[in-house]
Amino acid sequence: MAGIDIPTLLTSVGGSLIVSYIGVRYFTGAKIQAERSDAARRGLRAVVGPWLKSASSYVQRRKRTPARELGVAHTQDAVDALTVLRLAEDLPIWRRAFVRRRCRRVFGKEWVDIADRELLSAGEAPESSWQITGSALFANFDGDKPPVTFTDGLMHRAYATTDQQVAKKLVRELRKLREAY
Image 1 (cartoon, rainbow, N blue to C red):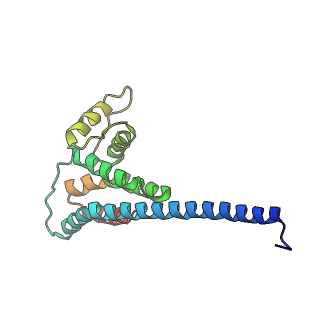
Image 2 (cartoon, rainbow, N blue to C red):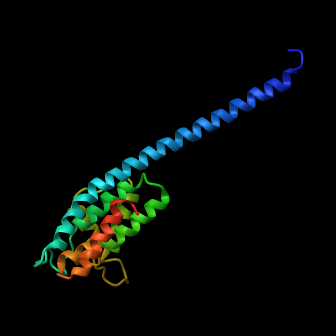
């Protein structure tokens, strides 16, 4: 070791160790996050796929009879919104924002707000529509606010009316939701 002094060697080795440690931790974390995001997108495709197939076949029918009553809310929309929002938790923040926006359009603002509250609450989130119905009933008795309607989502409007345009909009939004866009 004639030409190399010990402090320079130790500094070089120490710097290399620090850089490689940080690099390994960063790339490993990025890989894990990418795998979780990919699993969430596959889960979204699996959940939204049957809804899209059903909505597409509903659009294709010549004579459609409404599958829902126009003024009657369906709590299954809230359970479905909660399912989608849970799956979206592992997506990057920008994809989560897209999924939340699509959910508001597909299921309606009020159902997504209830699903958001259930996601943020501690403990087990409700899995049944009965528990969500209780939350929805309490939403209507919230002080001086106007009464809440739970029938403004595309899912409800498409299945409650025979309007072809609303059903086509639902199919478009479900395609985007399936891909987390």
